[in-house]
Amino acid sequence: MLLAGIDIGTLTCRLLVAEVNPPEELTVVDADRHILRLGEGVDQHKRLSQAAMDRVVSMLNHWKEKIAKYPVNGVVVVATSAVRESENRQDFLTLVTQQTGWEVEVLSGEEEARRTLLGIRFGLPPAMSNFLGLDIGGGSTECILSQTGKAPGVISLDLGVVRLLERVFHLDPPTDQEIYQAEACIDRELAKVSKAFGPISGVPLVGTAGSVTTLAAMAQKLSRYDSARVHNYELTLSIIKGLEHDLITKTGPQRLAMPGLEPGREYVIVAGTVILRRIMEAFGFEACLVSDYGLREGILVDKARKLKNLE
Image 1 (tube, rainbow, N blue to C red):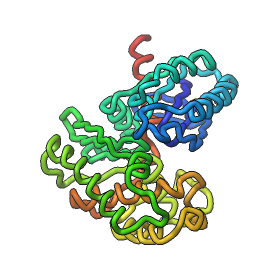
Image 2 (cartoon, one colour):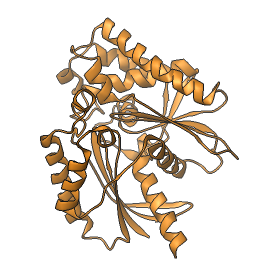
Image 3 (cartoon, rainbow, N blue to C red):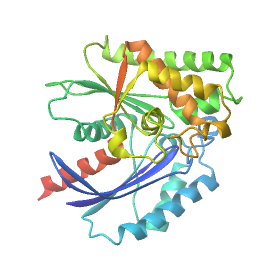
Image 4 (cartoon, rainbow, N blue to C red):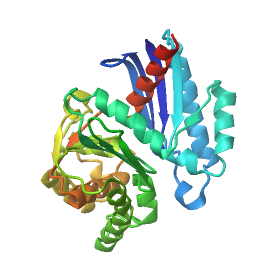
């Protein structure tokens, strides 16, 4: 069945139109993404700004026109950390419905993790069922422990690239003290993972979302983003440390000269790199398998399964 899904993230909004036939088929028909920074300032003020809401609604109206060209069986629109944490989220949800006619589902951190896992699994070989999934977002990071024969373990951390940037990284390039403060923030959140999952060993790390895929593009010096080359790319810890060194010794404008880094990520990529590196160090991972499949695909797989059950 042909479905459209929109993921309204803290930093980035993503559209996917795809033919989805669980358990194995997902064929992309159309896709788009834009860095719209809906969550800027939410960590401090707990409110979505009017300017940020207007940016997102304008893009949603554009995407509504795009989706109308396809005979879709359904449209799913979800929102994550920035919206679920903001005190004025109802204003945003009402505005979206008034402007587009769409109802936005605000995902809990745990539900976001569950649907992200659906997306990640869709992009992996069927035999690869045991892994730690990592979704580093703008406002939160979801950790998902997938194990054969067991319900997945999921935990959502108050740790995202926009949140960490606004809390810690005030100078550009960042200072050693800011890196140390960022690591301390990350370590406090990672204690929750150890408490929830216990020791993590013997499983690969699979990372998804913009920071991880951007690092894969940068590692390969891609002049244009190429999903086929990013998906299933292996980021080693040594590669990540090398990229981190290059990033933290440059200013934002200087980083934009690095192949693979798209405009709009020149500041948050520092936070994303430190988060990924620290997680790998904390749990003993020497490599991270990159997945270009994540929440955007997962919400469509989830919708397709629900529609099939209604037939």
